[in-house]
Amino acid sequence: MNIQEKIHQQVTADTVVLYMKGTPQFPQCGFSGATVKLLRACGVQNFTAVDVLADPEIREGIKAYSNWPTVPQLYIKGEFVGGADIVREMYQLGELQKLVSSAQVG
Image 1: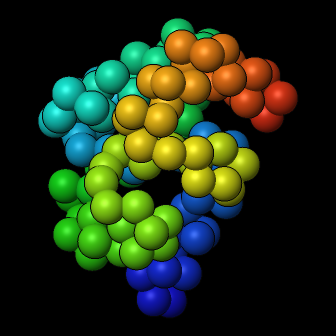
Image 2 (image 1 turned 120 degrees about the vertical axis):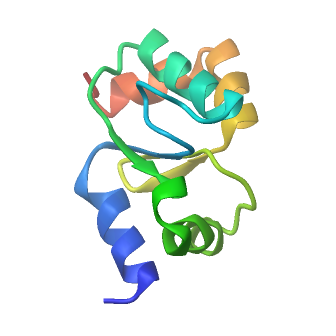
């Protein structure tokens, strides 16, 4: 399995997948930490977090997979939602809450 296939398998294996630096308990960058806080504020307690610092191949591969240059990257139901700025904007507009609710995430 190549890295793109592995990433595709990861983003489709769970309802919410966050590629981030560090872990939800110990984020290694402010943007990753902020994205975790926004998910929690929407009631998302259980999600898959992939620490890109632990695997350089995934760290580079996820950027190609989404055609998005930065991490964190949020996926809901296999679809790329965006990075930290987009997630924050969606939260401020109430869109992230609706997306999470429609995906029946808990």
